[in-house]
Image 1 (cartoon, one colour):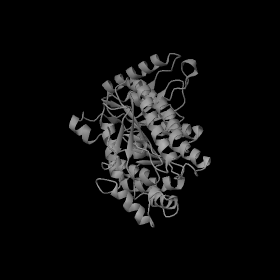
Image 2 (cartoon, rainbow, N blue to C red):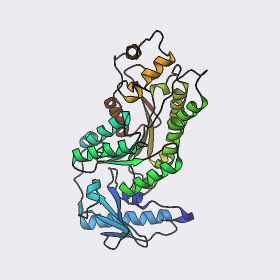
Image 3 (spheres, helix red, strand yellow):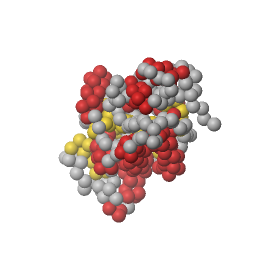
Image 4 (cartoon, rainbow, N blue to C red):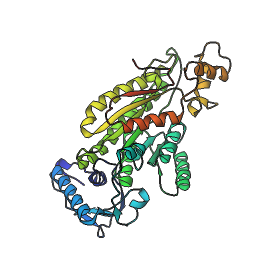
Length: 386
């Protein structure tokens, strides 16, 4: 839908914003092009986008007051498309009347800070990303498993949806280094759920090696995924979140979270491409946080320690244990076990980071309404902020 200056307004994101009053908004999904049976028909848009959204907010308010609940379906005059609303994606695909739940207490909201939220996780089909997806589903989130590995994302989604008995995970292909791919992913998110509440930029790669020997191709590959990919994802995720915020009248905070690394807080020997990209990501986090706060978008980073059990480290062919052994990064190491023991010994808590540790940090960032532009170390005491 076009507004003033041919600005394309994402209807689903605006409808979703209208359902928020400081709490998690409803899921809004595109149902069909046939809009004749809508429970609520919003007025036709004008060239004044702000005035249009204000009218829609008032129409939503009047409907809720009159019917003691939200409309199950919404359409916009003069626009093709019927949108379903619900507290879950499956409910949004039905046409049942939606009753407003009782207001939760502050303690209950803290306990259920992620329940019902829509979360996009890039690199979500394996490793840290898969662990994050699994934990967020247990927290009550609706998740998008965004990954180049389409088969892995689809299989994980099928498993989780089957186990939970409802749609809690949606696979979507994305190449975070490609603007068109990321833009299409966010358009898919908009069509499926209206918008997202949390965007987790987790996709990452690593190529270790001496600065004297590392190829430019490998250096640029790491930079394109780990650094530029975060920029591209934030660019398109923040656009959609900003529209939702406009319709929510600034009452609801959303989050963009970069999964950085302890190597983004401290240099890493023979690992300059990765550390440089992660340091750069933290610079982007701080800069984006200053810009996007006006859209009520918080931007923060989680900086995990070494995930020694994940494929990034333990893959027998291209994992970091193998790479570091071959690169001679650990003096005197003869075996993979030597490399593992070396890295475990550097952690005061004596173990590597786990996905549970990272998810707890994510929950803290989302719950904490008064933090933006921060980089939270989750390193077992190996890296301490100064």
